[in-house]
Amino acid sequence: TVSASSPAPSSASSPPDRDLGTFLLLAANVLVFVLDKLTPVPLGGLALYHGAPRAFQLVTSLFMHGSFGHLSGNLFFLLVFGKLVEEKAGTAGVLATFLLTGVFANAASLMLMPPACVSVGASGAVFGLFVVSVMLRLEWKLKSILETAILGNFVVARVMEESARAMTAGGSRAMVQVNHVAHLGGALGGVVLVLALNAVVKAVEG
Image (cartoon, rainbow, N blue to C red; front, side, top):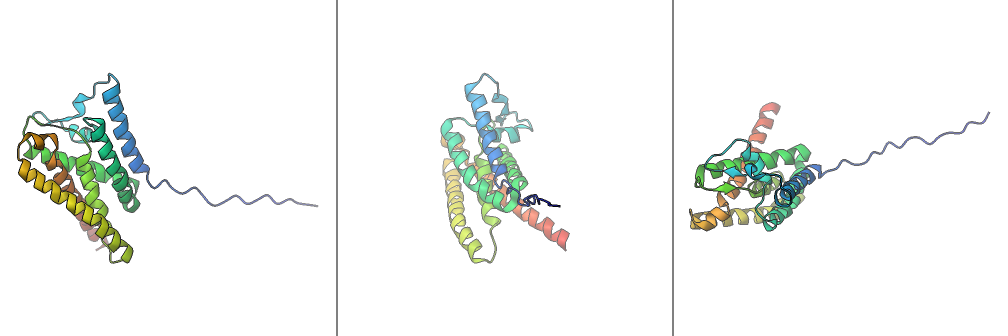
């Protein structure tokens, strides 16, 4: 008898999509912007109204943007720093970082900004991604040290710049148009998030 051997099935599987979380965040921001600006769908209630805030607005306002320029700038940094966080923390990690630091940023705004303000935009969460992308790379390895130095230089410069602007703007119109408090709140939220997770990990391992 003659037997023909069939080829063994390939064990190689397609690599996981390492930037799925970042893509989902980008897509959500673009979708909300298109619906808000180009359709009659009423989305104004998703913004964060400081005078009468609702809990869900702490999250939904992160996906609202006032103009294409506002959206475009946030999308660029979300793409770059979202991928950097997702590379280390995975899809769930980048989604959680964006949402938690964004909520932290909005909470800071509610506490420190005038009640007449209306907050929209992902920039608070983006500042959270800035900080987390650096803190996740704090290792005593040459590659990590180089990455941390380069990213850290950028992040520290941005945070210092926002601090200076917040102090000089005070309650002026410039301060209201650009929410520097939210930017600093998001950065602080990133620090708190990483430190809290490290404490949990150490408690579980110890």
